[in-house]
Image 1 (cartoon, rainbow, N blue to C red):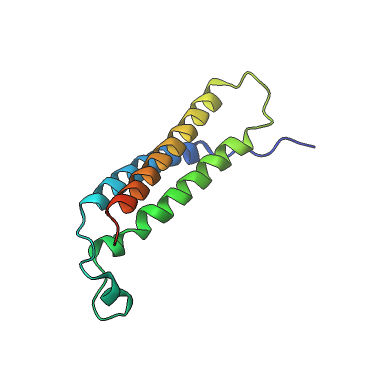
Image 2: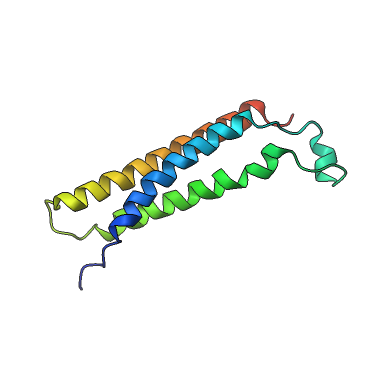
Length: 118
């Protein structure tokens, strides 16, 4: 069975930068004004708060970054070891993107758990 085709180099770089962007988006989310009356928003009596409208961006972005990082790592699983320097750098970029995405998820979920609607 042949080795899987490697992901392009720009995908690993994109993973790292998108992970960093998701950390920034999660920090921005903390400072956005939240809902004053969640029940009225759910009953469509008021517009959703800015934080509620912004939240899907980092949440879905985190999932995308994790997916891209896993794709980069998964496709180089059968490469002969030791890896060439270029693949080592791509692996590092993928792991950095995954770490940034997990940090962003932790920031959002801890913030929502501590300060969410009561």
